[in-house]
Amino acid sequence: MQRLSRTRRSIATLQRSLPRISDPDVRAAMRAEAQGVLAQVQALLAELEGDAQ
Image 1: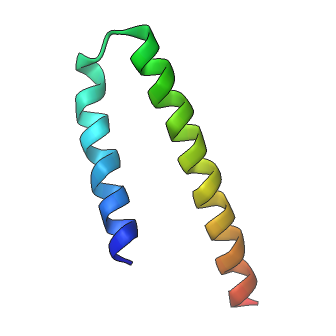
Image 2: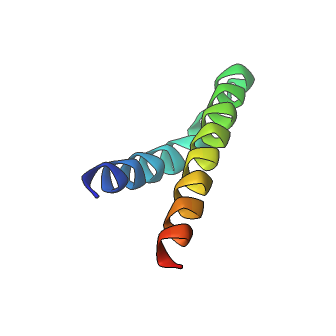
Image 3: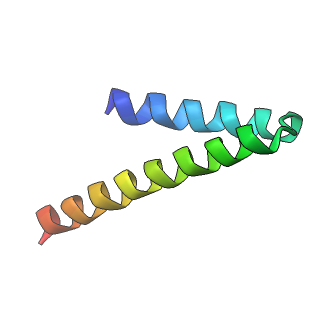
């Protein structure tokens, strides 16, 4: 659970910083990283849904 809390805080920090980041390469890297995190979260949710059944 601590890892999820840290991830949530990291995402909030990035969201606050995003408007100040104008470098397209940095934004593209952030987008790719966010998509990777999304895939991991979706896999975790799928596993948790399996546990609930």
